Length: 350
Image (tube, rainbow, N blue to C red; front, side, top):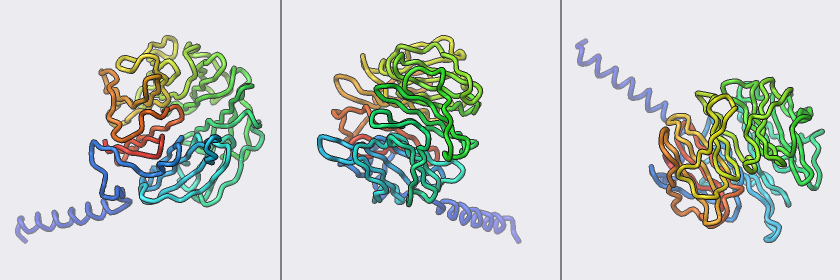
C-alpha cells in the first residue's frame, strides 16, 4: 500500500473518532448562542438566586428562585435537561429562597438544596427529602449556606443565620447526621469555602462583627484571619492554583489576601464607589475574575484579568436596575459559559 493511501486512511479514522467524540453530550444552545453575546434562558418571571450546572452534562441546569411576599410568588427550584430551552418545576415553597444548589461531584444524581432547610435528592431532582435533622432552624433562623468536599462528598458544611445569630454544622455521612462545630464562631454564617488545594482548610464568614474565620483541621479549631469589620462577607473565592490568594466579596467591595491570611488589601480598582460585591468567581482557565456587584446607582458585572483592573462587563439585555443582591454567577469549565441569575436566567458565551 502506498504511503499516500495509508495517510488517507489514518485521516479518515481520526475524523470518525473526533466526530463521535463531539457527539457525546453536545451543548444544546438552541441555535442562538454567539461568542460575546448574552442569551436569555427564560424564567423571566422568577428572581433567580442560585444556579448549578451538571459537570458531566452541561445541558443539565438547575435554577432556584426566591419567594416574594408582596406579589405572592413562591420560591421555586427548576431543572432543564436541554440547556435552558425548557424547564421543569421540581419544588415550589412559599416564604423560601433557594439560596444554594450543590451537585455531588462523584454522583451527579445526588444534589443538595439550601432553602432555609437542607433538602437532598438521590434521583436527579425527582424526589427530595428533608435532611435538616438537628440543624437548629426556626421562623427566624434559616439554613441558607451550604458547601461540599469535592474529593469526599460525604462531607458537607451548612451554615445558619438570622436576627438572633446562627452557626456552623458538619456532616460526614452525606447529610444523614449533623454536628455543631461553630462554638468559637461569632454570629450567623454568611459564607463557607473549602480550600481546593487543602481540603482540611476552610474559611467561614460570619455576621455580627463580620469576621472571616479559618480552620486547618476540618472545623475543629478556628482562628481569625485578620479580615473583619468590612461589612457582610457574601462570598469567598480561593484561587485554584495558589491557595495564598483569597478573594472575599463584602459589603465594602473585594478584599484580597496573598500572604497566608495576615494582611488584607482592598481590591476595588475599577469598581464603582460604595459598591457591595455579592459574588466573586474565577475562570480557572484564564485566571480572570468576575464579580456581581450592587450599588446606589445601579448594578453590574465586572471582569478583572491577571495584572489588570476591574472593567465593566457587557450585560446586554439584563435588567441592571433591579438589585443584584441575591443574584448568582457561575462559570462552566467545558463550554465556557458565564451564567447569571437575576430577573430570569441568562448566559454569556466566553
